[in-house]
Length: 137
Ligand SMILES: Cc1cc2nc3c(=O)[nH]c(=O)nc-3n(C[C@H](O)[C@H](O)[C@H](O)COP(=O)(O)O)c2cc1C
Image (cartoon, rainbow, N blue to C red; front, side, top):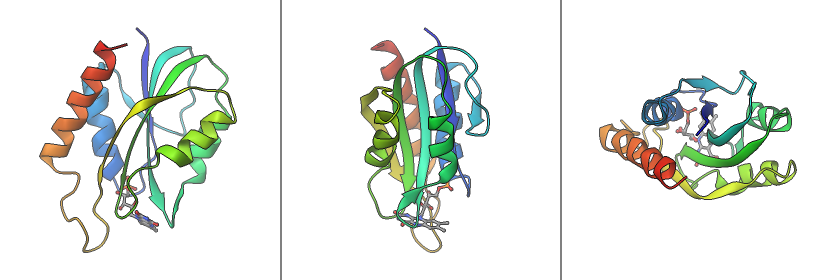
């Protein structure tokens, strides 16, 4: 199965999840500046929320996808909202790219909020989540 991990992370929180997921998937976690160059079965796509929206880089990455993607598995960190699933889902729907029902989310540190998040437990959980997703195809 062909796997890829892309993420956008301004402060490093989502990057921690991306690296854990990439480790479980046996691929490198690359940022959304790096386009996909070949078809993939599963794309793990990481993002977070800045002033209620996902970063424009994530939208650009998705709109630039020109290979076949079996499904996108969303992962995200944020301080208040619960996930970027819906926002990313809209961007994917515009490209007819399927979004998996499963997602991974945890809180991300923001100023004095959620210090230390994602923590070791979150990072381990992200890796386990990715393994489960891959096993289930
Ligand atoms: C400029 C800015 C705006 C943010 N706005 C929101 C927001 O509207 N809602 C929210 O839940 N979190 C918000 N956050 C918190 C981030 O989503 C959270 O810190 C996230 O983990 C950042 O991920 P990153 O370190 O991968 O960039 C904001 C963070 C920044 C820096």
